[in-house]
Length: 314
Ligand SMILES: Cc1cc2nc3c(=O)[nH]c(=O)nc-3n(C[C@H](O)[C@H](O)[C@H](O)COP(=O)(O)OP(=O)(O)OC[C@H]3O[C@@H](n4cnc5c(N)ncnc54)[C@H](O)[C@@H]3O)c2cc1C
Ligand code: SF4
View 1: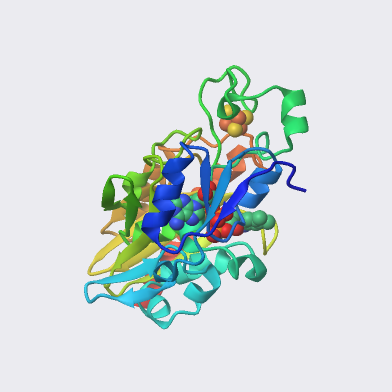
View 2: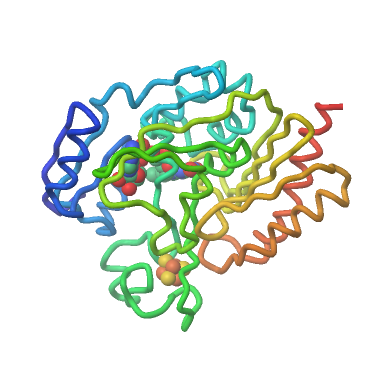
């Protein structure tokens, strides 16, 4: 049950939403599907004074063909996107990651924007306030050190968006509206690399859309998880290929996705790409599986995925 009291507002356009956020001086939260925010509020990880529901702002939910780009509104639902013909046809890596996201009932509620802006997760953090207090607050809760690696002064929480790695392989861009206007950036520029505060966001910025270059690609997404549905990724591997170049991205190990470009697709080249990615991540014992196992699965899933995708190109 949500114990805290908060105001609930439903603005009719982006300007009103941003203005409302400003009125509450950083104690506001935007709500799309609520499948990440509401559980966080229930656990006391988020205590906004006002929840600003974006669902009435209909231009945020549409998917548009703009010629060189496909514009995906931030409030487009995961379920609708995975059924979208353009996405199936042009961006198979994204189609696969949308399909792999939690389960269909959550896909019907959860949006792509909320998926990208979900906070990072850790077994020692996504717990009730009572549980966390008894353990002692860690870095991500304003404490002095990490509970997963006692004494460490770095947070290793995992950013578990299934769709971020797939969108990185497609060189997606994202657009925000905020108190100082609109800005557009490469998705990969969104991340701070610090799990305590994973996004480079200014207060009040609202994600309006995701832009994907409209280029035909082949690709896919492989996910490590215990159960075939609902589970967050313990590792996610995306790959897209088009015009002689491939991009391999891994996610769910640490605070951001990591990518590598590929021009060769021999076993040696795939192993080299996986090795490059492995050097950038440091999985620790803060999920339901052993960190060494997650690490070893990077080359396994990468090899499986790249071979499968490139087999179709021959
Ligand atoms: C049981 C369970 C299993 C899950 N499994 C997975 C999984 O396998 N893979 C996966 O990727 N995710 C998973 N999720 C997380 C979540 O369901 C999805 O990421 C979903 O797509 C989030 O979208 P939402 O619209 O519900 O986000 P919300 O909860 O509405 O928002 C998420 C965050 O983004 C902010 N926000 C939302 N929209 C905007 C916006 N337009 N601009 C600025 N800020 C915004 C909110 O304030 C909040 O902090 C799971 C969740 C649950 C409860
Ligand atoms: S990795 Fe450490 S600091 Fe980060 S949330 Fe988990 S316990 Fe806290």
